[in-house]
Length: 259
Image (cartoon, rainbow, N blue to C red):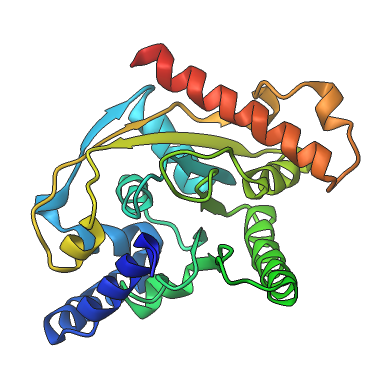
């Protein structure tokens, strides 16, 4: 069992505890009433409120995050970063998160319904299983794309989770949709202070300290993606790879500029 599988097993064990099940009823209610961000705020509780650094005017950022179609991205070295970022965004019904399959229901049924699960390859994966997984992931990404096209908000971890690794095609798939829209935005965050096993400690309602920096929202048409990339064949691996590379460079430039 690898470290990710061990962590998921630990999370599943804690999630079965009666105390956690009582907490999830409150989380479910908050999520039904205010969407994914509201449910996550209930999950984190007041003592887990992170320090927040806003690059721009928080009111402008919050307004776009609440009312406009927007792609939300952040670093994701552990499992907790999406929760920290999304907890700072306003409530809206039409926000979903693309996340690791297997964890979507651990924090309550309602949060689980708003997490679009995708699955990573395993060491014992056969060619047939790989094709099945890829087909299933493509179907899940169709749901994320439809949410964005309907002027919703979609969170995705560009590198698929983990400390290192190049950005995957998922964020490029969403960006290709956004670039076809009349109006869409891109919002970045960087979370610091996460620790190993923090998701288990979160389920146990432990006191955790983190900080999150949130960028100014950018209209996707103003992102540094060359026209030569935009003109590549729609849906091609070449186009998605190039978009991902430019977005990764943009993120690193943003983070390093003010760090």
